[in-house]
Length: 491
Ligand code: GUN
Ligand code: FE
Image (cartoon, rainbow, N blue to C red; front, side, top):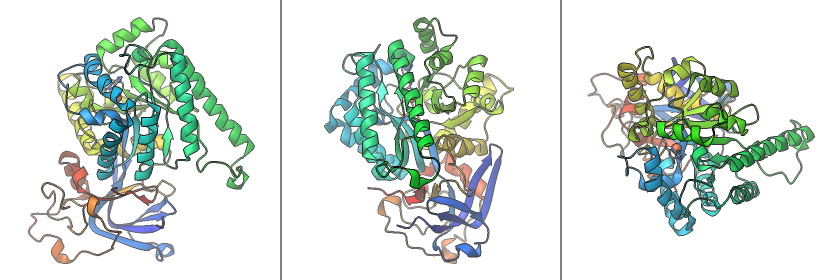
């Protein structure tokens, strides 16, 4: 299918944390997978492109889930009366051990990917388990889905049951190296590996240092490659895979729970802080080591400064932080101080994969923190949560999260009267598009006047419609979505 086309509808994007841009009844142009811009009138030069008419529907950039766990989808919503460390030992680790068996992993990962496909998420950074075959299976499924992802085979060689723990640092490093080789051989287009030490309590010093060395090696490989074949694509060797592996980034957990933080202090007494321990091992940001750290609930000021200096992305996981009684991260101060922040669903600490819900939880948590903890940190607004869910997390992939020219064309079409939504959210919205699971290839059809309900009290503005989608299950209203210009299809 062509990746050059035009979408027509009510275009809504975040420009900055405080600023939404709205073009009602506008045109969003995709040329070969990249946005050519959002316009109120279609420029003449694009008049020849196929027009996909979603008049009346809301079109937003794809939502980004910057932190979640695929193998935990199967037991979401259980064990929620425990705190992190007991929850991991009693629920998470026994469940993750089952992914040794591909017959168990396959239907579980299929369900995970199907749920991601059905919602508004277009990109995800995800943990699998320690198991290489199941991780590759998850990557195959994500690649087939058309979503863009970073997937991490988990590393853990201590403080976990023998059924899950890798037997030694050497074994974990060996299996990670083999996994990286296999992912390169598969030539994925939108599915990329990410180094994933689970967190410091689960990784010996030797394992952490080995992963840091591996990361450094991956970035020197990239600069070598770039030196020998500069910008011109024709200079690439004919046998190069479709996407030359960039330096392998890193994801992990940081400063989520008070007992965990105390434990890290005991385990790494030489380190100046929890964040510094990652940094000492070469696993905390910098130009050649893009890094996501989930949670960051209790960062000391020096740790926040270190994350800022190293350009680390914080994945804010508000629902999980509530469910596991971890705490409330001071996202407002991270934003004010210029740190990079996106949102994570963190299933199964979080109960589901909706990034709309993650926006709602982050706003709600910030209100409680403001009211009960620190009145100097104003609650997040809906527009700010939308920023975090689009540009905030999207920037981990580069030019992702907005509609300006040159950005990857990730877009979600939302119809508040979609038949699968439990109750119509907006009587003024159209009812023309089919639910995602039943879609035929796109058939453009403008709405008849009757499809705009004449009985609505008043039309909602696009910003009000966004707010309702955040608070009232926007994922149920998705009728179509695109990643880098490709339609994401329910399988
Ligand atoms: N810290 C280490 N592992 C995990 C995990 O699986 N979930 C959460 N929420 N925190 C963790
Ligand atoms: Fe997590």
